[in-house]
Length: 124
Image (cartoon, rainbow, N blue to C red; front, side, top):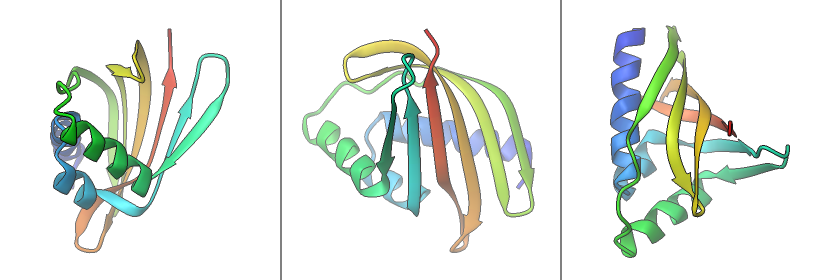
């Protein structure tokens, strides 16, 4: 995997996740997934894979309009079986529309690339 292909994989992830493709989300996120969200006021919240899949499933079941796929990728690097992508996304979550700064950590495991860690910070 090189940085260019990691960016393509990340854009695919963004599309599939924002369109609530549950089966894709189940296979692209690792079992030990940890998502960390930091709000503007410093509040930290976390989510695991089960919670993420539940969120995606509920949006799919409710036929929620897909989220924006807009993303500006600032940096991507791949070194052996690990990769990292840093990006800014315009994303609405929990009724709030705020730009967010994301870091995704990818790992090649179980014969495929998976997201093992994700963090995002609300920047406005």
